Image: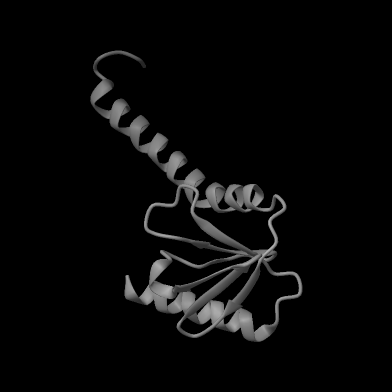
Length: 118
């Protein structure tokens, strides 16, 4: 059952299984972990427009065009906008509580534009 005769099949199968587990954990776990980390006390105002998004926090105002974001992840209770291709800690987290249908439609159309441009 075990031994060097099974190694040419067992080693690649084990590596493939580990890759599938790690990639699925990344796909499903990272957005939720980022949202939990981001929910810690910062208050901002977010205005969604057709050409980008404006984030106001205190006296700071920043306009970010949609091309800055690598994706738009829409969940039941929040939306995550990762900035750049490599998501480490740069993202915008938007709660969906009280979000109007127009804002949600703008986010969905931005998601569709970003996914079709890739």
